[in-house]
Amino acid sequence: MTSLPWLDPDQLWFPPAEQALDDPDGLLALGGDLSTERLKLAYRNGIFPWFSDDQPILWWSPSPRCVLFPEEIHVSRSLRRTLNRGYFTITADQAFPRIIRLCANTRAEGTWITQDMIDSYGQLHKQGIAHSIEVWNPKGELAGGMYGLAIGRCFFGESMFSLETNASKVLMVHLANQLREWGYRIMDCQVESGHLLRMGARSIPRSEFLSILRTCVDSSPDHSDWGFRWQWPGPEV
Image (cartoon, helix red, strand yellow):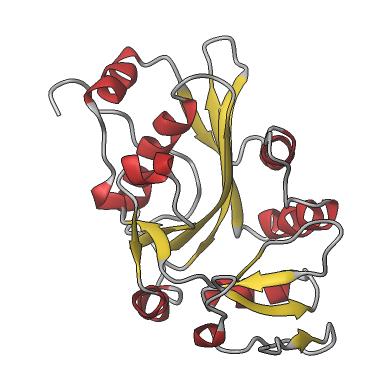
């Protein structure tokens, strides 16, 4: 049986992502902590935490890796009609605490977003690294949302929820196009889902994903704040 490294909270390091297990796919290490410095180091190296309250901290780097290249976002005919209606309004960083808690509380299958994770990602938000994307309906109510990390020209999506039909799809279209305009190379989706694949995401080998990170995490994007300015162009596009 393969032995996984147990990380010491007092030592800031990770084994190379290439050493992750094939079964379960991507499990790399256990233990450590959820300090902001460790989280930033993890994401820069293609690693993320995913565990339950009754487990130690588990660190993962699966292969293949599901990603969305912003220029490859797919807009179906039905989604195009929804966007043309202009029903939803998209913002960023307007309700981070509410978004991360709704991501934790609206999943029927349970959540890995523990209180410790909420606290740590909240600190990353205060540092300008973690961001929320909000979807509002015409009544000013949250209809969906997402949070993730922006490091260099890479955006690492963490969790998303939808309270109204098409809210998460509209979010993805706006986010992908805004990231493209800002010069982001990639949006990490971690693992495949039918929803993500229909939106244009695809899986790539871990080696390719890590190569992109090495090129992009230290490169500055083309924006200084997270004010969303991209607007759906309308039916002529």
